[in-house]
Image (tube, rainbow, N blue to C red; front, side, top):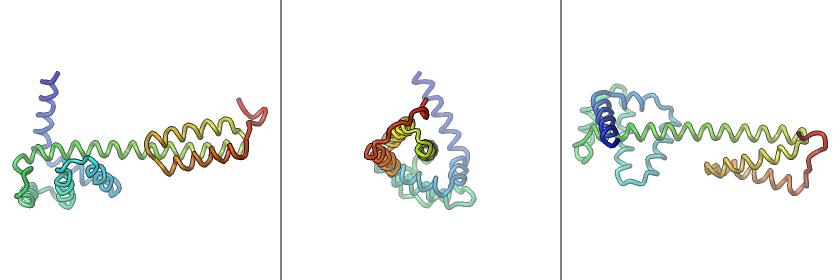
Length: 173
């Protein structure tokens, strides 16, 4: 199993090292995705994360990929000696960051849909279902540390409890 993992990595490494796929990936990123990547990479906590952010920025500024210019820019850095490894690591980190960005974006979408569903249920007087939506929203917001959304759901729960909302007969299923 370890052997096949090593072979896959070497194939990936060759692929990244031989083409400008990293440049293509970075060039295709939106400003929000680039900003998210920088925050994501900074959180990795490795001392080398700064170098990878600088490498990311250098590649992002190029209209056409020019590896020689990048190597010249970072000539004094240790990672240039194993540049293809650095590019492969940066590529995988960008992909992970984009995956997380999409995941968070979809979580935000799910939370907004829950808030809309809550509003509809409250307007219809279907309070037991509304309370279930609140609990689901709290759980999801807490799990993904979406504090603004968490506050909104907690406030809605508190509002319902303070006003002693009870399910209306005939409205609940």
